[in-house]
Amino acid sequence: MRQILVLVILIGVGGCWRGECRKDNLSPLRVIAININEIDIGDAHLIITPGGKTMLIDAGLGTYGTNVILPFLRSHGINRIDWMMASHMHDDHFGGMAEIIMADDIEVGKVLWSTLPNKLMEQRESMYAQDSKKLIEGIRQACAQQYVPIEEVAAGHEMMLGDGVVGRVYAAAEADINVPNYINNNSIIMRLEYKNFSMLFTGDAGFEEENRLLEKGFDVRSDVLKIAHHAGAGSTGENWISEVGAKTGIAQMPKWLSSDERGLRVYNQLTAAGMKIYRTWEHGNIEIKSDGEGFTVITSK
Ligand SMILES: [Zn+2]
Image (tube, rainbow, N blue to C red; front, side):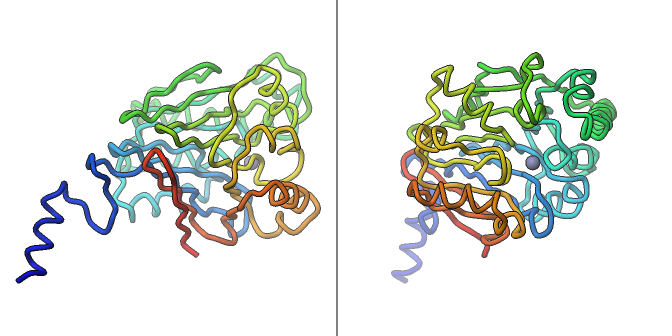
């Protein structure tokens, strides 16, 4: 009898159960790095706001959109992505988007991206330009067919995701810059903020973009860092590490990248700076849960 009474009281206080809810009855902010890295490089981060809005940042390669991300969304009862954002125009980040847009049981509210002119992609990164152009066109067609609006993201945009969750866009494509790894160095960099919690999303931004941002004086300090470029070559410089100051990092990377010199350099520098690194190949799906003050990390393996 007493047990029944206790249960009733718990449910009565806003339906909270096992500490999942807080006093004000809001769910936590959740960020999940979906493990699409058993074999390949690729990013896919799902943000679920306290009010239940969803944002998918990147969707991996085409096959992962179909074989991993869609089943993941279905198994978590998610039938709507309010915002689907491509960090930049490489296939391991936006290759799976068209499949998700076309899925009959998942509604997409809006596609956000920051595109580069075809001509400049061809001139500065001929190796990937054809693939990128084809994917951009495929997503445009999927959006036209499903009546999904597309919006260009620019630096300075503030995305209001509800319940005080904000996505502050620090950097987006700047077509005119002439840098190596042109497409990576035009990644969207966004600081996700919820009260006192912050997480920095970096796409595949390289040293050049990190320095561009630091020179502009942005407040990049964050609790959690999405380690850029799969924690591999050409990203995550020493200044960047110390300015961001995150003690928790998430790397969407396959095992092979973590054991060669590119991955080891980043891993060693970050751990030396006191960061605990979670890697998808090692930890599976990696989830950050925050009530706006502290946060916890939950992994599937
Ligand atoms: Zn990538």
